[in-house]
Length: 460
Image (cartoon, rainbow, N blue to C red):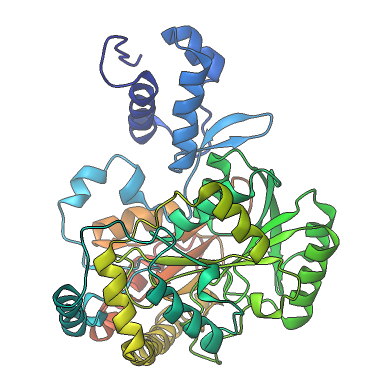
């Protein structure tokens, strides 16, 4: 039984959410079903709205998922590891982690701190006006620089006026969901795909249609058979499989959008970090009918801590934003925007991109070589050549839970790409962005030690 205090200053749905969350962490297993909303209402004498709000928050934070005709079931997130969701969480936070294979972070030393400090000081000393509210759409000078970069480097067709600066990816895609919700109620999304985007739209009451990814990206035949007229894609470097959509399928997607009065949300995930070929031009650049919304961030190539994203809206969607949602502030500090503007205008962004590509290409190639030599043919690489992680899968039956437990004992953090319950795609995400090049061999030596303990039959 949970303790729910009707007289507490803490709202009832928050009390219930916290109690359920702790119960899940302490007592529930993956795929175990939670009590129905009606049962919880009756036990604790709570309203339906209160219980639904608590369950909705658990879904949004990735503890549970709503399965049609089955109710709410405990799940594992794409980025969940044993440390983050189970009993050993508090204990392990106090212990030193030797190697963290998180698939979306950068090495601390890669940030151009000296240049950034100098440009920040310059922004403060010059004409920074802290006595007024900043431009809600984002500072014009910064939007001009972003538009120049997108035009030349990503083949995105846009003006500065079409760009909205956001406080990170979730901020941008949440605003877009609000803008689009009067016309669209269903979102098609890649499966496996980026769980954060799915959760944002689920939380805003969109119906989700999961469309399988094959060797050429999202299955267009299945998309066409779905009821969705809005689709979220990572076409240049699909998350998590790494697949790039070929030009023929890009044209088919644009044709689908034109025929169905649809919209394509293009998340240019990891686009700057391609180590094999030149970065693939954007899907938006092929669009001649204003059917693509383009979203990008500075998180993977510069810093996730700065929390700067940007969104390029077609003119008809921009009009909706200006009429109904222009009161939303970008959420990025004026000082950060001014500093980033100077960083781009003075050429440091282009230099930094070249440097970060070179650094991470070396680490990517070294990690690939180490995985192939240490794990031999017991694994296959399912995604490589770009981004901040290499994805691997075992070639035989494998005990993933044992890997989690052994990794904790060896002070390693491992992460998994795993879609919704019942599907069989699972890969281990070997992130290298936050590990120093000289530490990679020791990291893989330690990882390989526990890897072979998790193979469920001898491999030769």
